[in-house]
Length: 140
Image 1 (cartoon, rainbow, N blue to C red):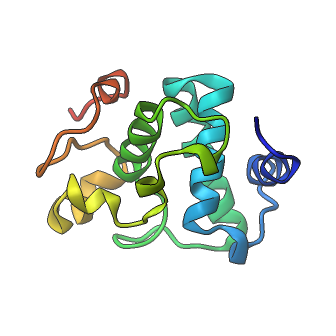
Image 2 (image 1 turned 180 degrees about the vertical axis):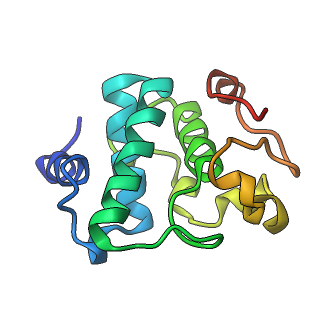
Image 3 (image 1 turned 60 degrees about the vertical axis):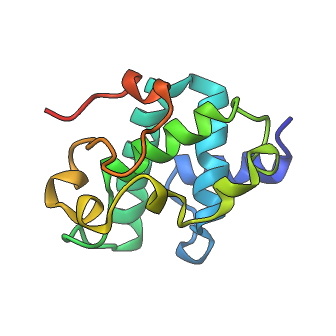
């Protein structure tokens, strides 16, 4: 069951009022878990992607080769969280998923920094993602 704090965080994400200092890795996880529980994987990916872009715009975060929204990162994180059984809260997720470096187990720095990884979901080059990742739009 989500807490009112998690619901407030999700609400402020969805309306792009979440302060930049509160948009932490843990906040990303809380929002992702909330969206997965509310919508399922494919729709959560759409809402999360739109929300991150809107929040970045509200914060004045530029879209560059190294900053801003990354579809590959977003899809990979959602697949990992969905595979953890869609816990009712971020605190119930597998503890390893609170580690911001988890993607390094699946992706090389070169793959994540590939310019096309920002707009397309690139599959991992080190270790496979959960099977549910196939529900997301694959690379072209």
